[in-house]
Image (tube, rainbow, N blue to C red):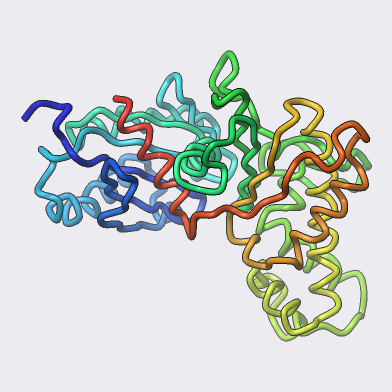
Length: 322
């Protein structure tokens, strides 16, 4: 069968916790999906093997590997130019990991790879709320804080494939600034990722004796979801945690606007499920901090694609280019 006639591509959203695979058709419909735990595999070769084994049944559903044109991967610190993951802070694999090559050798199809937030941006631009936009910034709030920057209709990769790591902009330069997984201190990611939200909760509970539903949970087990549930029940401490997180994000976005004057910021990831609890402080803080000439121009939006669909679809879009 000629390559052009192959009707499906594989998209992989490789997150710090879970890896979601989807088989996607040319209309952007996910025909079948499966997942494995990213953190269960200390050796990347074992991870690739597990991924290929998980894929086999869903590849069979669409008629076998002969129906697959290629595979696209969205991964933390994924380099579009080289197909490698480079020193990802939230993954177990260190150094340079040639993930595109490893999957290509196992599956026998061409594989392309990009940063996970870039993949989400491509998905949003193709199928979501950013459809038709030529200038926007995608912010992913997951295990870390990722970003995909689209300028003049093109994803910004920079000279080495690593442009747009806005999660590692320094937000706190005091000696007490939080340690980030990247090695720096005070990064946006250390405060505004899902793990950062849980950390804020632990700090408040430790440093104060304020009553909170979160005290019913072992501090080390608190997750951002627990904070969202407590805030939804009216817990003042939990609401304050989202207020703090949202204000930092809004302030950071006000700074990012200086770079590319986007028409929108699109937020994606588990934390957006908190709705107005986080989106309202983001909007208010953005309005408070943005330079007057940009006021009222950029929309603050939540992704139009559910779960990891944006990232899977965005990753799959790379597969069509192969």
